[in-house]
Length: 274
Ligand SMILES: [Zn+2]
Image 1: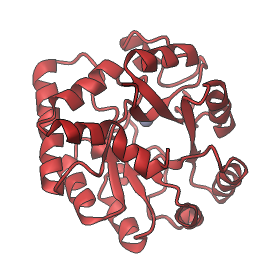
Image 2: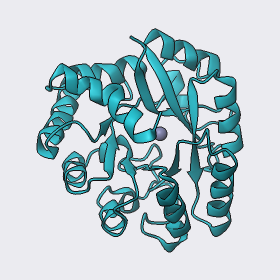
Image 3: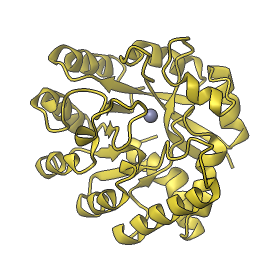
Image 4: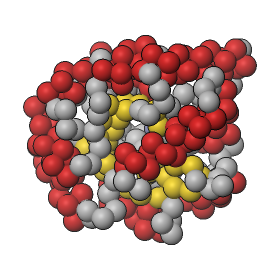
């Protein structure tokens, strides 16, 4: 059917990419060509591309993300990553402004950077995103490195931002993993707060079957609590999670088939204006 939207994809084609180890574990080539092939094989029509972290900690420059998207033949759309300095916030807004037709959202890397979601440094970004109707994605929960700051990446840090900004569309990445119940409350409470289910399985580990069941139960329960699947968005977090594993999670959800379709593409299409 080729309709699926993957709202969380990374790529750099650089040898100092910090996500290379996940690509290796998952047996992925982790190149633009490899990604486009995976998308085709799994009937993913469109992807939102985000900067991966480089080994020294900084994300890949946003200009390179825009370049990959231009090379993708319309398959990938850019998300601009915003680091917590006045200069970076300004640069991100100018880049979005100059590429208004292409840029679909912003991304803030909670837990990897020193600032909290409600830090004043992001006020200008939120003002701009709000006025342009561009969603802001937030990394939340577990971090890919063991030095991440979980107090700053906890999903509940977004409650205060959402309280003050009912017009800002926010996406909680990775469903706040493992704080799924907190995220259930956030998407229930706030009309403009969504959550993606990307990056929740990294392959391997003990009890993989039990883990997949547990995860599907947690997400299903969050959907029951929130009163429906309207706020839940599909994503892989490629190359961290394989397309097959991310799609398997959706298959396992104990919800109606029509609701799975909303999660796989309908919600993202509406929310990101794709
Ligand atoms: Zn990610």
